[in-house]
Length: 240
Image (cartoon, rainbow, N blue to C red; front, side):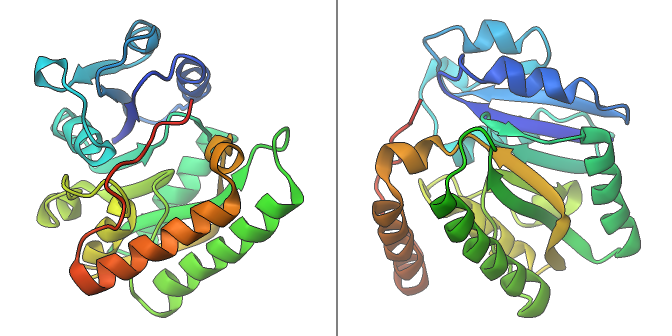
């Protein structure tokens, strides 16, 4: 069984579409929406399709805390945790997860799996294809060749036991929490990117912030993590 965890905060524009697409999934699964204090219709819409958990007291939470909270709510017999962003689309979910599970079955040492990331065709620009193409290649090299885990957070699939051994996401990180998890998982077992798996998303942050600023911030966060074990970013502004 797999548990699909989706952290949310005011995602009424996309959450229903994301969850509805996943209802086509035939294998044993559950969907958990971990909400960080939405003030719009996110919770009501999500409750039609998924179990909704919220942080105690309705306080805001980092995305790392949201993912951890969702993982804690997973069914006892769930073997895999899937972390998916609210604005992501998995084309043909049955074929996608059949492939993902085959990767884990073929390699008992595999503890973390990610996919190539693309922007939805309706939103995609040439610069998106170029930048994400380079980023996907770098992530493939990091995991599959150098054996040093790294991953975007839009899609991460993790063996539940390994997630527990790694103590989940670091709640103190507002950025690079996704890459940090895979780095620690790679000390436990294998992590990889499978080119046959593709996840699409809206690209809304690229549009709102712009690639130059995002790339600059990414390198600052990477350097800060390497030198100080904490992100340069002090907050991660929601883009809706």
